[in-house]
Image (cartoon, rainbow over all chains, first blue to last red; front, side, top):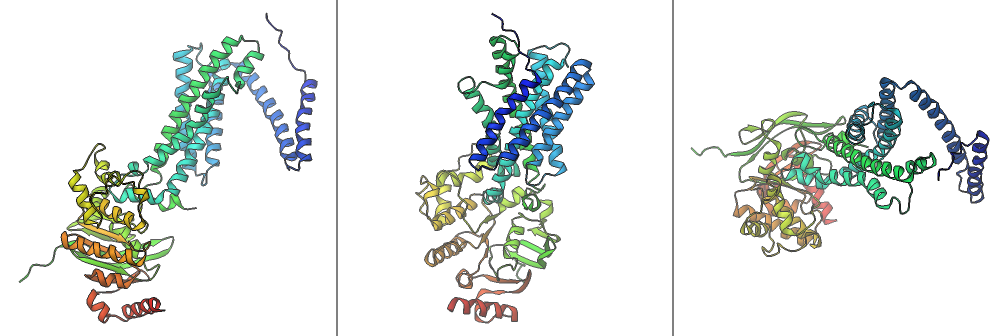
Length: 264
Length: 250
C-alpha cells in the first residue's frame, strides 16, 4: 500500500504554530520566562528553514559541483566558528584548527560513504551529499565542542598532575594523555548513546523524514544505520585529531605548560 | 691545593618577568654537588619560581642556567628533569597502588617497564617509608605518607639533584619534623644535592647545609645554615629571620 504524500499548505503550517503558542502559554503560566525565547526560536526556525529551502532549491536546480562544494565549505566554516565560539578564548588559531579537523573528519566520511559505500553518481549529487553532510557536520560540531571544552577543563583542573608528570620526565604528550583521553570520551558519548537507543526510545529525524517523504521503512532504516555509522566515524576522526593538535597548544617546545594558554 | 668543588647547577644573572611583574632579578647562584640548600624568604619572594626554573618547568627571561658544564638550553628538558627531580608542595598521587606510583617514572620511558622490587622498596625506605607497603592503595595514605611516596617516586629517576618545594607545608609539626629528618638521612646515604624551599627557618636549621634568603626576587643572603642562625651576615637576612622567629613565637 502506498500512501499519497501530503504536502502541507502554508495555512496548515501557520496553524501548526498554534502548538508553539501552547508551549509559550505554558511557559507564561509557570513563570518560566521562556516566552520571548520560544517565540524568537519558533520564528527563527521558520525563517532559517525557509531560507535553506530556497538555497537547496537553487542548489538542486543548478546541480553544479562548485556550488555544492561551496555549500559544504560554508557549513564547515559555520561549524568551526560555532565550536570556537563556545570556548573560553575563541582565537583565530582555534577556529582554523577546528576547521581543519572538521574538514578532515567530515570530508573523509563523505568520500568513504558516497564513493566507496554508496557509489553515488555523480560524486557531488546534492540529493545525497547535502543531507548526509548536514547530519555528519552537525554531529561532528557537537563532538568537537565537547572535546575542546573537556580538554581545556581537564588541563586546567589537573594542572598539578600534569606538572608532576612533566617533573618526572614525561613529554607534554604523555603529561596530557589523561586529559586527551577524557576529551575523546566526552566527544564520543553523544553518538554512542544515540546508537544505543536508536529505534528503542528515539526515531531519528532522517528516518522519519524519509518515511514521510514516501520511502519504504527498509530504505529509511538502511540509510539511518549508514548515517549513524558515518557520524561515529566522523566524530572519532574529528575529535581524535582535534584533541591531539589542540593539546599541543598548551605546552611549549620545552615541554612546559604555557601560562598564557591557561590564563583566564 | 684542594680542587674546586664540582657544581651541580649554576645560575648566571637569571631574571624572570611575567606579565610585567619581576619575579626574579639578576640571580646568580651555584649549587655544589652533594650540597644541601634551604631557600628561605617571605611569600612572593620568588622561591618557587627559582625551583621551577631549576626543574625547567619555566624558562628564564634573562640569564642562563647550567647543569654541571652544560647549559640548560642545550639539554633535553625530559632528561634534565630526570636528573634534577622535583617534589611539589601539595603531594600529587596518581591512582593505583604505591607500586604503580613508583613505577611511573620508568614507564614514562618504556611503557611495560617493571622496576626491580628491591629498587622500589629501596626508594621507599630512602624516603622514610616501610619498604613493604608497595601494594597499599596510594590514595588512602596520610598526607605525610603521600609526600614521602612523592619523594620516593622522584628518587626512582636516579636524580643527582632533588628539589623540594615546601614539602612540609601540608604536614603537622611532628610529621614535618620527621620528614626533614628523613631528607637529612637521605642526603647522608646518597650524594644527592638537595634544594629545599621552606617557609619555616627551623626546618632549614635542622636541614643544615647552606641557607639562601630571597626577598623581592633577589638573593639577599647566602651563608652556612649554622652561621645564618647564629648571626645572619646581611641586614635583610637578619630582618627576615627576626620577623619570622617573632611570628613563630607570637
